[in-house]
Image (cartoon, rainbow, N blue to C red; front, side, top):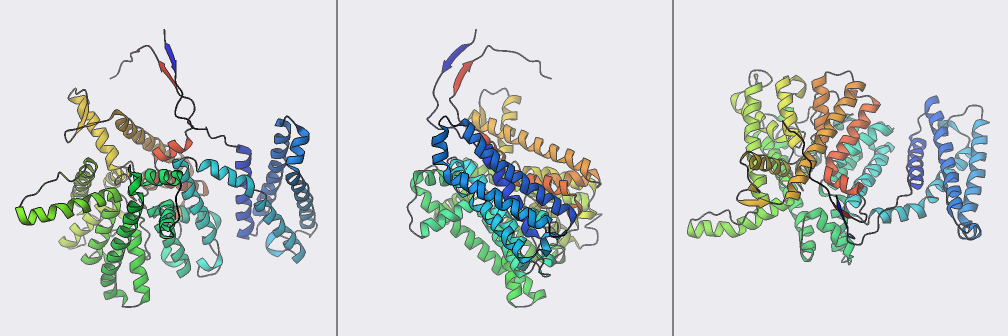
Length: 590
């Protein structure tokens, strides 16, 4: 018989989400976006009206539900008097707005009389202000959990980027992008993916490109890290919750070093991106000239490469520079450094600072200063890059690489091996690759870069833990070991969970896209893995995706960037834990 032992977990108030408030908020935001998009057709008008009536219904339902649940009705009315009066005024204004609209002989949103526009704008503003109080309390409840804060920060930046890309000044024609394309582009930039539905080089003005660049930088570093860096610069004091969040994001266990860690991350980023921009400027100026445009292109590609974003200001990515050794090697180094993670880079920096003097003086070399995590990342990265280059060259040297000289063939194969794992740039045409090459690239994209880096995928660290676990099973070891270190079981379980989550996400995306898209299945699979791995390589079907297909890719990019563990931790609610000891059971395996 099972023995039941109840133990209280560390005191933490479970998050109670008012789903009615959340749904109303989301629909209000959607309504605002649709209204500001100025789409003039019958479907958009019907959709907007339906959305408005739904929001009004949810407003009414929210107050009614709260009123019914309250034990003291009079106290509720006195306490919520302002909200009730606002709802009455809101309803009257809503009805008046719709009456004027429907009586204007079929006028659509883009051609309304001035009075109706004023009334409609007041209506829109009231929808926003009406959510401020409950939105703030909802956000405070979300930010009590680090994982939820990270997820929320990415979501808010994506929403901001979407709205900005819909504004007229971001496109050369002054029309702005449509909502779906703006959402796709903003998500791809913030999630440092690089998949595009419109050509970045031609579809955006200089201001639109600058918006994308800022979204890439914010997504690569993490908006919370940038926020806390500004707090340190302005000498603002941080709460314990703030410090706990920073330690969660930077993997820094000692909270006394948080300020130094944040400054090191920012400094390393600026130094690497600055050096990369200088080298790229030297490479680009031979063909583009010495001017401000070349400087902007160099800075854009340096940030895009280090953040592993893959956005390019050339319509063919970097195919036109496939034989330029300086540009190719600079982008390669930036991608590799961005995919190592800041933890590994700082560990390497400290190890080199201590090891180089000993190497010069004593002629001795030691890896003792490198952490286990750094060794795993470096060994895994080197192995995958070398293996990828050889396999890509073997598969394509008679096909897509056949017209290149031998040096350029190896350079292009190495470049593609590096960018396939995380970045999304390409120096060879992706649409002309063979199916075996697509399959190989999917494996590398699914693995991705290092944990804590700007790369996506299930990560090298997780793969190393899974392989170490398999090795322990094959050798019948009691402990899982790696480099003579025993690994905790919870680490192995997390790695297996990440692997399983990744497989389920990718297979789910493939299933939906295979039903909604008419492209060849191998290209659909490639697109799905590229989105989840936040790689950004495409077999050429991204711009032809259906609306449903675009939303599926958007979701995969978001999930891949946030990470399975962060997503699952954000969804989890810590309740009172009950430890139950069950009887042992057996299941046949094999």
